[in-house]
Image 1 (cartoon, helix red, strand yellow):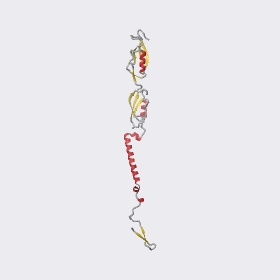
Image 2 (tube, rainbow, N blue to C red):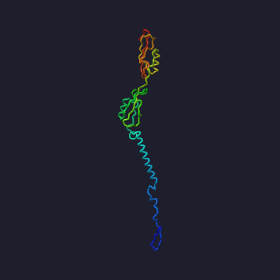
Image 3 (tube, rainbow, N blue to C red):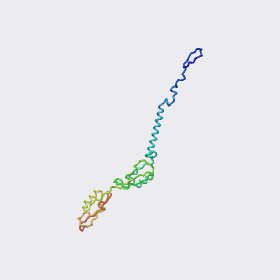
Image 4 (tube, rainbow, N blue to C red):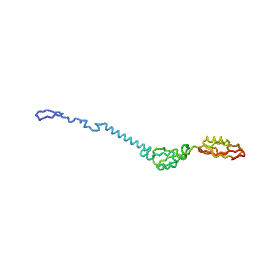
Amino acid sequence: MRLRRHTGSGFGVGRRIRPDTEADSPADAPASESDPWRGFARDLGLVALVALVGYAVSAYWLSPGAVFTSEHAVPRVLELPGADARERLAGLGFRVRLEGERANPAIPRGAVVWQDPPPDMVVPPNSTVQLVLSGGPAAVNVPDVVGLSVSFAEEILQAAGMKVGKVDRVPSGQEADVVLSVRPPPGNGRPRGSTVELLVSAGRGGGQ
């Protein structure tokens, strides 16, 4: 430690002087040393940025349209007539592939009953949308009522979901009011609600 003399009054009064080797005060330390939280926050931000970029790359790889655009969300075309559904999808840049028909009693024949991808899914441009059209109500086999009475045959046909249409009577060797034939023939598949015609015996020598 050095002493410096004061000569203003002639007396040699010593005063303590700050040593040359005294360390700098904490206020003079670099910001990175005096504020360690600032460095931690910076590192945390870098980690978050890397994670975000990784997520975006992964999402784009799995479904590029879902990340960068919503213009190619598949529209809902269920219950639309097949022609209208194809026109709407083609207008939005999708390709259409028909996958046949499926019986459906609630949706009119020719309307869309199934689509894949489903509505609102975002897919890449020019993706193919598969459609299945309604075949209407499921087919019902015409019951075999030949040899039965007309009244009993009508009950069976109605129970099967069919209607009795024209009834013709012709002379035959069978008893009167016995069903001789059915049109369409028994076993044929017909839509529910179809009409069945009957040929009925008028008995020997009878007829109308």
